[in-house]
View (cartoon, one colour):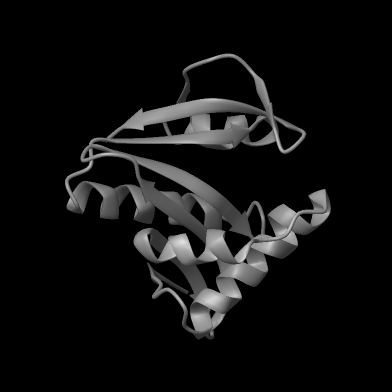
Length: 142
């Protein structure tokens, strides 16, 4: 298993977009727009691969010189709960530190709160709806 930064537009990126669509967007009847995908060339794209097949991914978006926003965390169905998400988060935090960022924030689905809390993230506000799903803003200082 290898976790790495993915180049925008390549074969691995196409796998990443498909995984995010299948896990996060399709169940809600949502699709990616071309504009959304084009802007991702400026983001840190992270994937976990086994035999060149994607098993999990996440996106880090620079908000300013100190803060990144984690988005689009997804793990292949059937592999959830096997440590892939934890390894992705550790990699994301390490690369964030390496690039001198001080904090990661996110809009975490309510169903994922326990996962992120175990990794040291804390809620910073009240529950809100995003794409019809309850979320919380969470953050962690690096």
